[in-house]
Image (tube, rainbow, N blue to C red; front, side):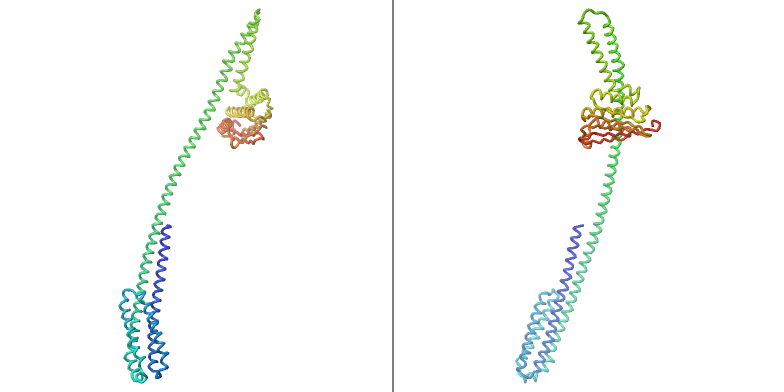
Amino acid sequence: MAGAGFYSLQKAVEIQARNIQMRRDFASRDRTLDNIRSGLLQSGNVARDYLMEPGQNATEPLRAELTSIHNDMEVALLDYSRSLRPDEMLPFQELSAEVRSYWTTLNPIFTWDPSVKRDQSREYLRHELIPRRTTVLTMTRDIGILNEQALKEEEQRTDDVFLQFRQRVQFITVFGLFLGLLLAALTVFHTLRLEKIADRRYKESLHTQKELKNLSARLVDAQESERRAISMELHDEIGQSLGALLMDIDYLATIPIHDASLRDRLEKMKTLGGNAVNAIRNMSLLLRPSMLDDLGLVAALEWQAREARKRAGLAVDFTEENVSDALPEEHKTCVYRLVQEALNNCLKHAAATRLRIVLRQEPNRLVLHVQDDGRGFDSKRIRGVGLLGMSERVHHLSGTFEIESEEGRGTRLRVTLPLAGRAA
């Protein structure tokens, strides 16, 4: 389109310049012919006045005027000859010859004395001057007609050029419109194709994301099931075996033994067995506290708070509001693990001295608030594995997970879990 515009502008300027030059040439040639005609008429009048003037002294100004008119006509003929076309060469040569013959006819009258002028002037004007002047005027008129004809021909050629230019512009416009429509069609087709690809990729992404969420949920369930099984194995099998071993050690300790070293060894075995039972009990409670299944969520959270106070001296303030014992199992597990992870983060990373936990049950949701006074972190840039796991658990239950933290201003955690009608 830029090339078409440049071509159209260049062609329009060319046509305009050609038209202007054509009219200038015609005006110049027509003006030259007018000068020749006017010079002929003026020279005839001057020659007549010269012949009618009886005195010799009064004829010098008329002779000088004729000489000036002759020079002007020669200049006009020279100017006209520079713009001749081939078909004007012969008429112009004839005109030039007649003009020279006309001035040649005028030259003898300047040598006549008054008596000769008086006797021959009338015959000279009638048979020599006026016929030659008429002939030259006729020839100038014919050349003028040729000049007008040349103007019309040039105008016709200009019209033909303009018509050709208009046809080319129309073709370029139609071709450009066709290319534009083709480009638009290709663009629309390509855009629709890209939209289909993007939609298919988006659906695949949604499907993959859904599968990942389901996998994550299954992994969490499998993890909880595995923890429950390991906790039960530790409590039921190993714990009971160690308990039976301690009972046997206690029985052996009641038998009178005189060997002091053997008695000391029994006491050490009793102490080691008791420590092993306590360690297994703590491991079992950390994996899956039996009180979460037996006594409910509130009791398990209170036990966590007490353990944090005993193990790290952290001041934990736990508050519950209208929390039912009939919560769904996945909700109880989720809240328990959230509080457990929050306590671990608080003890390992936050260097906090106080932790406040609020669990509140509303008509259609369960709300958990956890806030500490630790060192805090940039929650917009830092997200560890623990926080991601907490978020996955909450999102699996269609809840909302919000965490706010600033360096030096502690951390605030807010979790909302929707409750089904029967559970609520």
